[in-house]
Length: 287
Ligand SMILES: Cc1ncc(COP(=O)(O)O)c(C=O)c1O
Image (cartoon, rainbow, N blue to C red; front, side, top):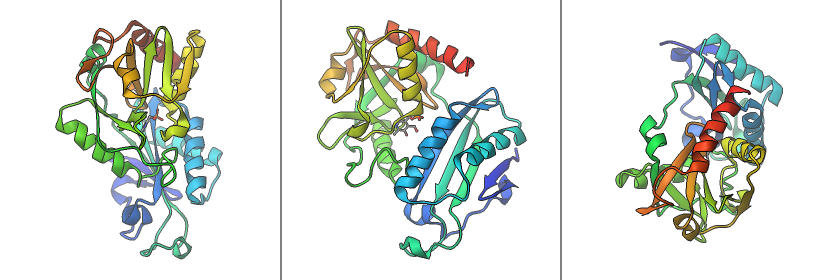
């Protein structure tokens, strides 16, 4: 179905939305992106996503022609124009157009695209039975080289390599470690585990994306009176956990029941995870 797309500073029909072959995003992966979810025609945690987008842009020194409020307004207007209720909103911004590497030769403004697309979700059975995860060889980028808190398109080459590894062994997700071997995150989701009623998740400085869903889940757990500890963990902590789960815009909260063929807890979605899945649905409904 034909739909509207926001391109640079105007709304165009999707078949008319064309990009230059000299776009720095295409040539060098020199850009950033966001994946946002709409529920009932409203973008969930839009402010948090736009904040993260602008943090990524600032870090990469990519300038935007409008401020955050105006940007959020374009996302909302596109949802209205496309008359979509539940969908995936993709935002991509690249530095702009020039063949060579040097950003000072960029002509004109950054390339900005907002589109609304169909959600691609894990099958329902995976929420009921839980995901099997394997540790992959591809590490998260070292923050000294490429800060993973920047949601840059270029960085995702690593995540795609990691996803290929996970796909090869039929795993639902791939666990990526830091260079030092500490637990970081999965290819497209943040990771949590539960031990003795306390919830643990890797600290942001380790080199993870500060997931918007991760933030929402930390808030919800706080409302539930459950302690959340952000720290540095190894796979041992996950192997010996009572429960584990992943969070992400697409996945929401999904149980993880195996890591590297070892069952986590009794190998079934845990009680706290199931409670959290329900609490997350209620949280979304009241946003
Ligand atoms: C590497 C990575 N970690 C975590 C997440 C989860 O982040 P969010 O909850 O903002 O979708 C994503 C989602 O795109 C991701 O790509």
